[in-house]
Image (tube, rainbow, N blue to C red; front, side, top):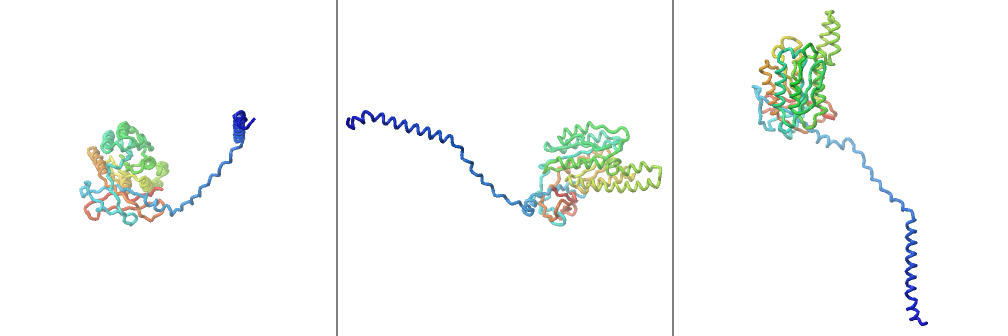
Length: 371
């Protein structure tokens, strides 16, 4: 058999055998690969740790974020609000250092959070116009508040009580209208209620909102935690003249200390304090009423507010209108503090309009920096 004939006869068969052998070896190799264990995972590179920043690294952040807003009221000799003063007319100092006022904010663009403190104790309800006070206070909220503003309602009685949390003007006004006056002698916790309202605003009011406390009361306190112990001593020593006199002196001292402490709490909350005393001119007829009014005046002056004593029912609505106009017409001076004082200790500020000696400026006396 020659080669040509052999190739024609056995060539195809030989080619088929070679292909079959190749396929079998490929399958075996594939099976072998499948049986191998997976390769170990590649090591994950660890990031280089960033060194912790030191306190001095935050200095720029602390300074740049320390924006202070000071609501300022300017009035003329008649007590009328003065508007339209340019920023260049104001001089603002913090701890004796002149501050650069970066902006005068629009009061309509800075929402209000108001706490209304309404006295329901017998010392006020017996004066005869409790219902008118309610209507005037409710009307004040509806007049001054915009949709972005909020108000809470507290009652001043034997103990402080929040009867309506921060909400709309209508909600707060309705709650005010539903209050009932005490029909029998009830003690008064004025100091405790102001402290409770201040802390509530401090904890629940958001940043960049103005906080305001408006109290309708004679300010006479007979049962707050600040004076409870001394009041108990007075009751126990009613029959002993010498001891009673000593207790009264101690009580006067406790009242002064209480006003100082309450004032500090209000300042820490950054709230402005306004008081409206329904007692009228008769408050000057006894020492207790006079002392109470002076205490409210001290708190108001230190926080940039005002203490009003309307002549009677006819002037109550007028006073509320004055408060509303003041809140809507304030200059909101804003500056970045350059004070070198560390920590959160009290920082005194002074605001003036040196080029207008005939005008009177009302602003808070200082503030406590937030932590």
